Amino acid sequence: MKAAVISLRSKSSQWIIEAMKSYFDEVDDIDLKDIEVRTSTHGLILKYKGGKLPEYDCVYAKGSFRFPLLLKSVAEVLSPKCYMPLKPEAFTVGPDKWLTYLSLQKNGVPMPATYLSPTLDIAKKILKEVTYPVIMKFPSGTQGKGVMYAGDFAAASSMLDALSTLNQAVIIQEYIETDGTDMRLIVAGDEVVAAMRRIAVSEEKRANIHAGGKGVAFEPDEITKRIAIKTAHVVGADICAVDLLPSAKGPLVIEVNLSPGLQGITKATDTNVADKLAKFIYKRTQDYILKKSSSDSSSVFREMGIEENGEKGATELITTLEFRGQRVLLPESVTRLARLNDKDEYAVKLEGKSICIKKL
Image 1 (cartoon, helix red, strand yellow):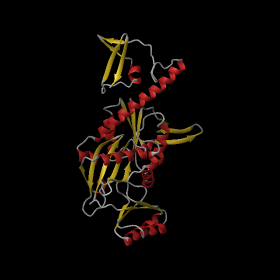
Image 2 (cartoon, rainbow, N blue to C red; image 1 turned 90 degrees about the horizontal axis):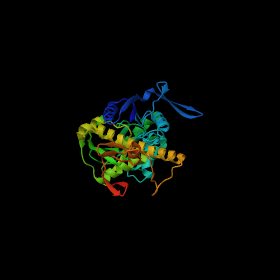
Image 3 (cartoon, one colour; image 1 turned 180 degrees about the vertical axis):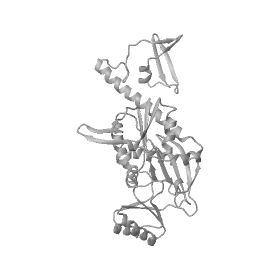
């Protein structure tokens, strides 16, 4: 199988590429800045260094929150053709904190009380109604950048006056006292593959590693895991980091990161997180290929006039068998269509001249 990682070539991306090489036959390292997307009467056209992008079984497109439109366009073009861990809609919702909060609220994911103020006047009205302290942040940003703490109305009002010169909407959020700690969980599909608590340095409210925070491994409870996994599903990401705060109400989601750094959590957990993600991507790519192969084969069978046989979904193939001594090898098409693999156990039933292989 052939895969590619489209990224800004950060250290974490390089780790994932190297890990994927242990599973895929070929892995290309593509710089996001070498990608361009054009519109035409025939749809979107993707160019790489001015030429055609090769075909892949899997493309992991990831990168900075500064390039959401480009990443979304890439996903729109490639997602019908190969497996992508991040769906097109993820690049609309994920990089924008307010759109993330809207999606979480719509789907019942717990988070702190949050307000959006498009103008300075509305923001100050909100500040008169909230309970202090509060957190103020911009809709875009990562690594704790653009996150401010206001202990009272005077401090918050002064911050707003300064921020008004930037002409940006401001998010005002309930402050949750956690003694400067939060939780980061790395989600891959329906599993949390790594988790750490982040502890802020003295006099710092942000626990982000890039803000000087320290990571410590921990095992999240099932409720926290379920919330993180649901959050990833809501934003359209098979792979992402979910940041949560512990509270009296239970875990609260504060942010989703579609392209999380792996250095801090790898060191904190002493776990090869890149390898876990690479293995997940490989398995999902296998599933994608098998599903596509099954769908394509069904279409071919229908065109050839071959009808389904027996129970719904069953297909009869006429083929030769390959023998290795006293052992027989199933044709590759049968193995792929039946999704047989060496990780599962099977029951083999003999009935006259018929052989039935059933997955346990």
